[in-house]
Image (cartoon, rainbow, N blue to C red; front, side):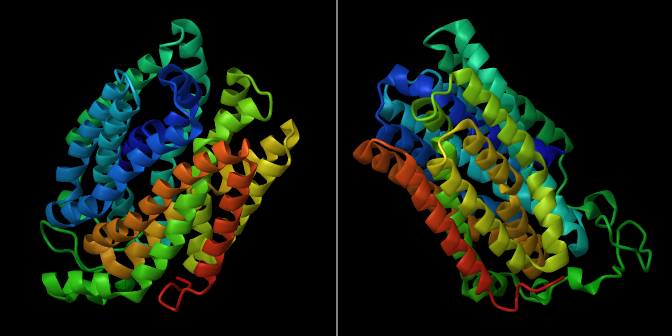
Amino acid sequence: MVATLSSFAVLGLGRFGYTMVLPAMQKGLGLSNTLAGSLATANVIGYATMSLVGGALAARFGTRAVLPVGLVIAAIGMALTGVAQGFAEAAGWRLLTGIGTGLTNVPATALAGAWFARRLRGVASGVVVSGSSIGLIVAGPLVPRVLAATGPDGWRAIWWIYGGITAVIAALAYALIRNRPTDLHLLPVGMAETAAVPGRAAGLSDSSDTPALEAVPGRAQWRLIFRSPIVWHLSLVYFCFGLAYLAFMTFFTKHLITSGGYSPQAAGDLYMLLGWCTLVSGSLWGGISDRIGRKWAFAVVCLVQAASFALFGLWQAPAGFTIAAVIFGLSAWGIPAIMAATCGDVFGARLAPAALGLVTLFFAVGMAVGPAVAGAIADATGSFVPAFLLASVVAVLGSVAAITLGSTVRRV
């Protein structure tokens, strides 16, 4: 629960909440599409900077020591975004929010690898990343109503609301979170006990949940992570996903308003529908990956998303926008869920945060590139269509990269 709420705060509000605030914030600060995309990029740069560090710190000190700190930093960044007077100041606070997100999200997502047996890890990871969906569901109806009630500067109040919610979740995380089941003398969910040892959980019936890497000395483990071909291959898949989906998400509302003739309220309603669809996407595709294997699930999700991005750009009618939003929503958090499960499969509970942090660094690089490039393309062409088509092509490349994954990512 705490991990899911953490994802809701730093991603659902801190990142995807920006999509709904963007038109009003862009107008209030006088920003071009390029600068608006660059604000999203600033957030992702902070995320990229701390994703690897967050995973490493969680592996060294435990998630319980790291995650609440990240939430507090993100809350401060969101609240201060609401007082920004120009692009540079807003970019600085979005950067700070991204730093808090990196310290929070990687450890939160990796918790599923510690708390669930391998055969349930995909579904569990999906439940964690579904926290992002709650942000879309909340922001869709909330933002237009706050803007209508507060006037042109209402976007500032929205950031203060986001920051306050995140601060409350930080307090809950500090009080409730635990690093692994053994901290409470429990076994991972879905794993049977074969031998009782007083004062701790021991004797696991599924030996596949304890990879050989766990037995390697500490420094050698880190070397094996950085030298592992599977890590770098997964990083390529994650980079493609990051670039494509954030280019799409950042300008989702803006495209509906400028090209589709939607009102802010109507765009918010469709954004909320997308959010409701994403609520099941992580556990859906995580469960599918538990059955058909990680790499094939990766490949199919990327192709589904490629179709949604192209459809959103080319079919500029309510039916096209709605179908594209639903298709993307049902696949949205499939890649993060499968990625977290894969890192748990390959590296085990203790090192999964570090491995996930490394691949997330490349995911973040893709997210940093996507909005800035999409905004620049829109300014140069006067349309978001080429940007959405580029996102579609990149998603196809991600599918190709997934199909070529080696036997390390196999059916479980």
